[in-house]
Length: 113
Length: 114
Image (tube, rainbow over all chains, first blue to last red; front, side, top):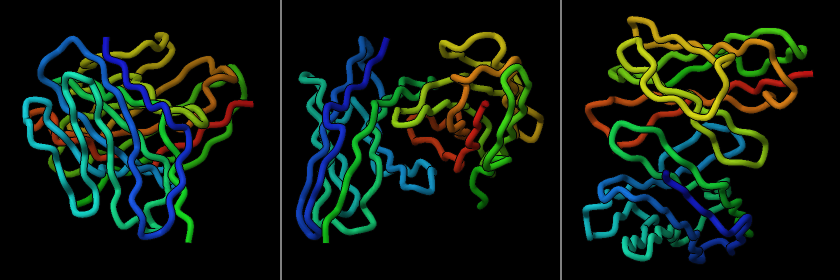
């Protein structure tokens, strides 16, 4: 069984500052994929960034980057130069090949101007 | 390239009734997954359809059923609605052969059971 844990129900960040959202992913599989999704009030899940477990290099997408530590089962998301449009619910999720996505409980991110 | 479209956007039903939710997958995608998201929680996997057959199911009772059509669109049917079925239902499409590249989600159907 896979479990995804997000221990921060809510986080706040000042505009232009950096914030890190935490996630742990537990699975017995060695090959899997990890994702961060953003869900704004419009409700649509938007893919922010993905990480392949067998790749040692951490993924980066513009202002978004991850710190993936496989042995520690940690998969954190760093948002640099935070913008008002980054305010949303963020979900960490894991997937094993061809299988379902398993989501964490989510972290609400508030951006202060 | 069209995204994932879900209908209706909102729905109110009475306990005991039946409901059908619809999803049009993104062009080029052949797999559709359905998720239930209760208020303030993460989405929970209901089931997945690939080549018109159920391909994996979460911990949901048989009164949750689905279909996938030749054009890869899909329906979620829920019979004998219960108050706890009130939730946002999300549809996500993907290309099975490109597993790991993420899913494209629709904006969901908000179901309220009264």
